[in-house]
Image (cartoon, rainbow, N blue to C red; front, side, top):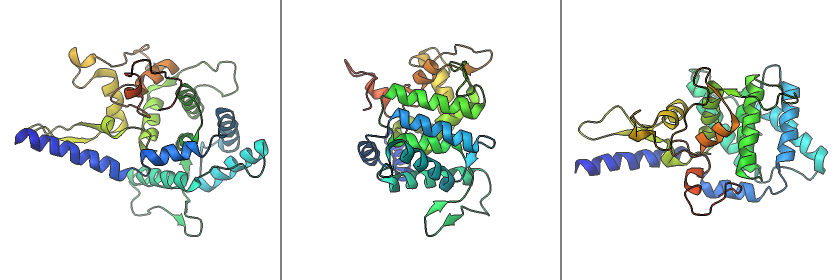
Length: 277
């Protein structure tokens, strides 16, 4: 009975994760399938232009951001080029912003919405908006990881996007923020987000882990013991806590983060990390 109670708690938390998710996996697949021409080259141009336009503050409203996105897309491939199934993108961005704004402690002000357009009218980090945009990206997993890493470098001011020192590293703080962005934009599988809470008696209870908690589990394991180290990603630069791109990719593939279900893909015999599952 106690075992069943603990399992029930975990299943309830999993149900909560799925209920809170703005998109389900099938909708994400639909979004990608509908945007086959939205390639890495297109997103790279958008990335450069939004930081050129909003680089001083590194934030914009969703309306401002989408205006730049559509401008770049139409410049590249004509007026008909747009984000297909854009209502799914709207939904995930609005949900992500609601979570971010409520976590900031500004509950009294609430989220300002433009009723006619249904768009959020709050300034939002460009890194979060671009991370949401990658939901529509038609690319390999490795290219997806690379553009996320470039987004972090630009937001972190570690490197200029067009500088010769483009193989730099990003801070641990930015990695945690990116995991948070991926979590907010429905890009982590539900099971990876469920961790043990501090309540273990009479049965172990579970909770939805924060990005910081998931990150340190991917580094240290569940309890920091030797056995729990299996599948973790050790620091390459433990002193300065700077993270290379390959290290970031490895973190995303751990069972504690598991972006896009990659922790499942790598276990399949003969599976390639060059395609999105």
